[in-house]
Figure 1 (cartoon, rainbow, N blue to C red):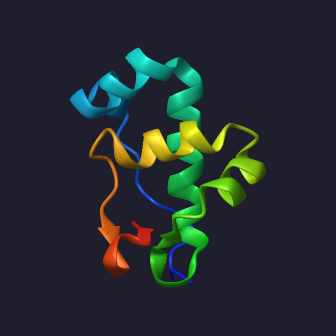
Figure 2 (cartoon, rainbow, N blue to C red; figure 1 turned 90 degrees about the horizontal axis):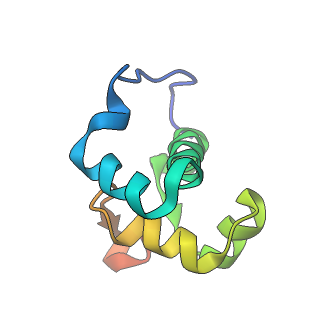
Length: 87
């Protein structure tokens, strides 16, 4: 588990070019999913999550396809563990 229970959040993060691209495609829902993934990473062992998109989708109540896209299509996360996890 990551040691932090709090993390900084820039007040203008929504205007980052990668986040803008995410918001163009998925709107506020995409930004919300991204934010929840960040929260989950903070609580995860080693601050990484497995690419179990079905389990993540169930937890966040969105499609696995959408989770996969948010994780892989916007360069917001970094793959690790041979591509099986991300942070």
